[in-house]
Every structure is written in structure tokens, then in C-alpha cells.
Image (cartoon, rainbow, N blue to C red; front, side, top):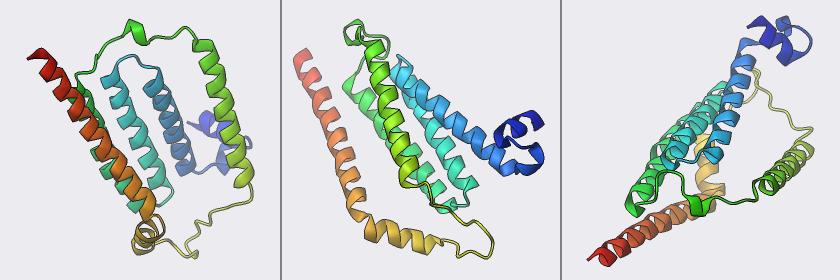
Length: 186
């Protein structure tokens, strides 16, 4: 553990807080499982890796003292979105294993484009938030659950509604697709 903390801080492990090490480990878990979400060939396993990714993100929120956002992450994303995804997979009778017709030959080009897009996004985020700092001192004004709820349901109500309509459309689409398969069998 001290070697990891020393590598993280670059100065010495005495300068690194154990909560920072846990935060970094949760971040690495989130990144690793996110890579597995997009690289696994089994759709159900990808959904399960998505659960690990979203749970690690919730752990990062907990380490940032945002308990309300962490539990919303667990309840909404892990509880609802992944269940909806699994129901969509089950209802559409999607192939679970490897599908030859879906494999492309342009993996190298796709990897280069993905790395370029990720690099661009990281560069833009670092440039945009370079001088922004979060003061987590005990004397700082802490965000309450009431303030977070007001921000989510007043300022960000439109994105919430758009996501709910998209999820409803996805569920209806999967039901329609599964019913068409049943009618073809009859």
C-alpha cells in the first residue's frame, strides 16, 4: 500500500490521504470495467460490467462526500437502467454469444478514432476546468440534499425528462420487436 500511495502522490506516501488512494482505486476500477463493457462479446456480461462501472462511480461520489448523488446513482442507474437494459435484451431475444455478422474488420481504425475522441474530450475537460477547485473543508458551505434536489429538479428537469422519454421509447421498441418475432413464428 505505501508503494501505491508513493506512486500516486509522487512526493511520498505521507502526503497522500488514504481516502485519496481509495478514490484512485475506485476510478481505476471504473475505467477498467468500462473498457470491459465495450470489449466483451457477450451482451449480458457487458450489462454486468456496466453494473460494476456504475457502482464504482457511486463509490467515487461517496468519497467526494456526495452521499445523495451516490445513492441516486445506485438506485437510478444500477437499479433501473441496467434492469431496463436486461429486460430489453430478454424481450428482443437478442443473440447472447458472438455474432459473426456483427464483427467488423476495422477494429484498428475504430480504436484509433476512439483514442482520438477520448483524448479530445479529456483535453477539453482539463482545459475547461483547469482552475476550478472544490473546497472540502469542514468550514466550507456543504451542499445539502435539499440544494442538490432543487438543482436537479429545477435547473436540470429537462434532461431528466428527456432521459425518461428515451428509456420509455427503448422499452416500447423492444416490446414491438419481440412481438414481431412472435407473429412471424405464428
